[in-house]
Length: 429
Image (cartoon, rainbow, N blue to C red):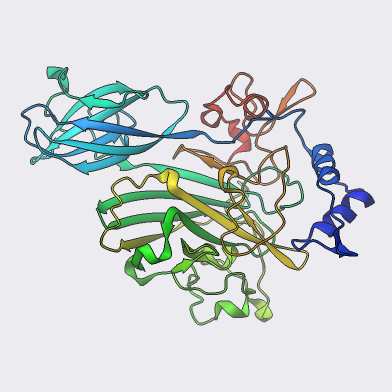
């Protein structure tokens, strides 16, 4: 991408802390938006776009039949007929019992399923419209009563895709950091969070944290990582200190940290390239930043590695009931250095969070620097391939299929809500 002198000057002035002259800001938000607009690869963006593909719903579930119920799940699909249906919410319940459950539901979804599970692990399943508020089993069909599921349902997984270039416009391949997150509520005080680092297509040091929306650090008793692991332990290079290869972007590497307003967030890693794993080139103690899992053609600069996963166990203090914790309460963010300062990149909903530091907020009317995709099978674009645009009447990129494209969703937030299920297969990893 070629930048004009005016463009470079404006971005230089942005640098995180506003430059001042005679006590007045010299950064002009209108000029900045014009520059972003000129660089945008899409013709137009819905002015009311929130870039959200999910909604949180509250359901009251009634176990109003004599099935020996021990637990209940809200599911994406019928586990009696579908392999690997996703658990959107889960709770203990007994026959005649009533529980309130919260779920993060893709906006494209119109129907969900509830399953009562008995002591023998047999399921009784009913379907219900997403907009339902009370779910009961009074109309349970015999064919869906007390049967073994095809497979044990898996926890709902969300995919988070980041662009490192903020506040500059990116290349919009959304693969600079790719995280996959899922959660399991073990009990009313114990939350299990699986964090997978799936890809690193960025070219500079990028750190990451995970804010737990609605909770303060003081609400949490402790955080551990299963097996004593850490993203900071990089493959076979345990003997090489991370601080020799990375600059400190977080103030601390403590697993549980308090944000500027006391908000709870988990420290994930200080350096995405280091965290990715085993294929580190430390020749002459120089850390070579490669691009991981973003190219189908393997070479020294584009290694293909097994994604890394760490399991976090978060133990909340007494009085902090977390049965209603949904994936929608995740706010993963990355830290990206720029012009001597550091920016936080969040999904659009949480763009003003400023968890670890204050910085100049941008109000760009174009594409966001991070997306959350509520689809475990989501395939992110290859390096340098944009996510899918509609421009000058043409369709381009990894999700460009007319009638189901990212570009059409960008233009109208009510259309193509399932765009992420229809990739151009030669342009995705």
